[in-house]
Image (cartoon, rainbow, N blue to C red; front, side, top):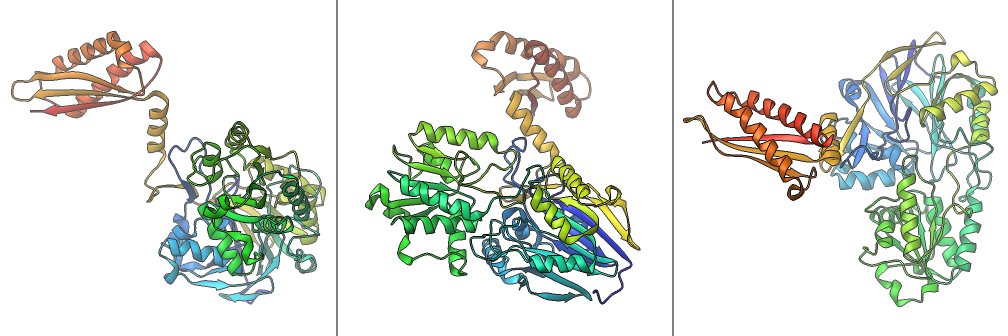
Length: 554
């Protein structure tokens, strides 16, 4: 039990509630703050030009003296990807398992933060006392080794975060979830459970990774030429299965894609990936072997435009392009929102002549538990209060219904959004307040310098284009020296719209003539030009381009 008597407990999400990605959860025990995970999210189609999205940590920055540590459940991007940004502002210990820290180290090294970072290794057996609070961990199965759940003891009962999980009775690495330990935590008394909701809508149990291994082996055995396997670079279990199947069929493996190369190197160095040294070959060596001796392991399973698989399909990759007789295995399911991109990439692969295997054979199983996995976790933990997290609202809702079927009181279930604080006092819970929790957008090296206004402008430019109106004015003579000149980019083709452009010029000139005799107010003049041009162009085209008046004075 906790060494401190905890009078007040608060739990909230800064990311990961009502969405897939940028997982970050906060547990407040009186004055002490414990953070679980620090992930990123990949941008939606509406976030034009944005590279990635991370949680807004302004609340944590305001209370940084109270933070006792960040506890990482596993090494996926949506749980570790924001650390290289978060640790610029928060000088706090980061706890994680051996493989998780190995992947984090690589990220922090690239960001130039590794030397300053305080990384502390834990495993499923670790027992910690941090700021007087007792913290333990338990092993769960996921699509990456070394995944754990977190248990923080309080005087009101335990706060348990499952991490991403499923129950796999025949895991690839032979390490099952800590059933006994999870049940024991439940027996001691759990105040609140935060649990993964990703697959709450899917019935039954999630499939075992071992099924995928035998299917991959069959695919590689049957393939007449090269086999190209696209997977998440962080799905170490899947990578292990590819190497094992390649060795069983006397094939060599080449690795493509920066993140894939990095993760294979880290996992092999830490002994989480095991294969014969001669199995892994350099990409430049694949053409020296017969096609039926080669397996290529690549990124791009989500149809990302610049990922290796998409470039191969477009015949735009420097070293590997799709050939007739290639077999491409998409060993991942699309993240919600990526379905169109994945479908487009698969179509391109077929057009290039490949035989594509995606969902018609068991080449992928989810690392997230289905309904029966989730019910089993709820039955083992037996929480008084329940917060379904890590999923879109419909997934949280489905998880809430599952919880009710196994006996959790409906009044004790809170479907939260990012920033909603659930407060526990004397074993009673209420939604108490809201903290700042939004998106911070990463664009190139810019962090948070692109906001809604910039995105709105980008969206406007992408939809209706831009119109420049250039005028040169003599302040002394109060006359128009040159212009107005209308320049269109992405709005209309100038040569085919001469009449409209000439009329637009005439409207601008007329408006300016009336203003030149008085005091010249540039802001007022620009606003007038925008209003008159916008009204006219909309009347003619039913489009609203961005209008930029440029007034030069001589």
